[in-house]
Length: 197
Length: 197
Image 1: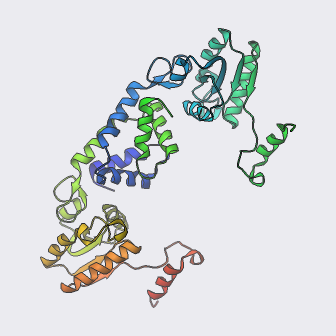
Image 2: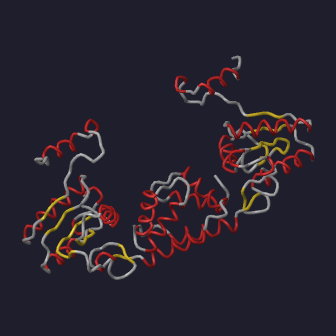
């Protein structure tokens, strides 16, 4: 709809996840018209992020060095490994401040519909880490959805070969939620996992 | 929450309108992980858009030349001027294919709350264009909200000095809408502006 480069910029923003044509237009005009928005900074970061950011050679988390800040931290408990799907999940768990072990980022979840099988995930690296001994618990913290559950089930079967306790994060009612609005699967899980008080 | 540059990129995206921290994180990871997303292209466009895109010296619409593609088009009717707030509004009206005249982009609307008065809009340029004669109708197509209505009222008073017919876009029920869901102001306007059939 626009002439030349502004339309190119709108199109390029429209390719990003969660940005429709209207938002892309709004962003492009914001960049064009807001003088104190530092375009060169954003342009630099876009180029640098691909060059500098890589995956931790131990756990697969993102880092700008060979090993991520968590794997480098000597205060972390090396005998606990929490298995997650994505680097974003590491951040989510770190925010709870409840876990002081290390992570293993699979890089996704098993999803036949998207053509993602166990071979596409960093499972061999996990097995090597566990094979090196010393680990006293593996916590499966994949998402509580179809793909995440399938991945957790696959991993727990695989891990029976190694004699290490495997746990899965609890499912149940979200804190601050309302019982009447919980879906039946979540409420069912909350019943299953009930604890004596 | 993240280390270094990826967090910087998330922060930078979070500064754009309509992008919250969660969306910014999603976009940053998309850029990091999607190999066929052309980051250098987006980075280039960001820099170029500020350098190359400017405002048409006649109407204030965006262009990469001195005059925009509409002002350059000899088939457009120079005796009709449609006054709008933003370049986006030009695109919206062009999409209707109902208007073959020229535009005048004010660059905003009068809004005392945001400190925008008539002097901040390109009103002198509009008066010069109208003073040059030949114009047989000015269509005020500012937004049908408080600021747009105030701007239209201001302009219509100002334009009484020049003897040129001034019109305002019709307000009423949106086509495809549902009468029962129309707000009372819109419905009131639809009554006021009713036409004999």
